[in-house]
Length: 232
Image 1 (cartoon, helix red, strand yellow):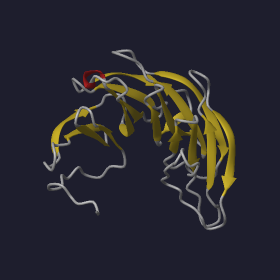
Image 2: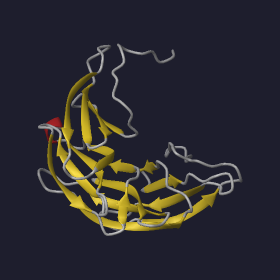
Image 3: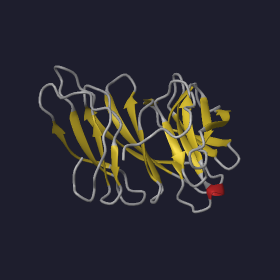
Image 4: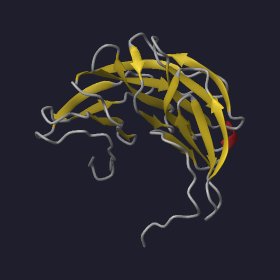
């Protein structure tokens, strides 16, 4: 059977980033400096607005992930990538049970531009793709998620090199410990797929290598991974 719409749609405005906390029954969408919360609704009930939180950590916010590794939804947290004009980006932590901002962690100088993120909740890490200031060299920054009110920890970063284009949304293979990132590319600059070894525990991520696609195959903005069968 084909999927069917359940209940009327809810207008969230324009946004590129969202996360879901299935156990708690909420979805989260970022927009400008606001983290919007939506109740998923039971069964075919419509999604409804359930409040919004203006974050103080940055001038604008981007990608968001949820740490739902604890079986108790009251202990779930969100981590939000925040841009600060003229300064390194920040990673804000939000307690979802109270929907409050707990604080933020600064990234390193040069890690200034917003990008995509991948979360490995079972192992406790988030991977943010950012761009080095003044260049098109992307970095993958490893962040450690923390319990309670403890702030997130920046562990390490790896520079993927002179891509010539931005990094799109990646895919995470948590079973085998790798992430895959595609570049946007252009007509004259085919896209490239990078393989990144995530590193066990607090070990830094490292570049394994890359695959250059054929001419004209560009703008890799999304991807999915099938770890069991070994395909991206």
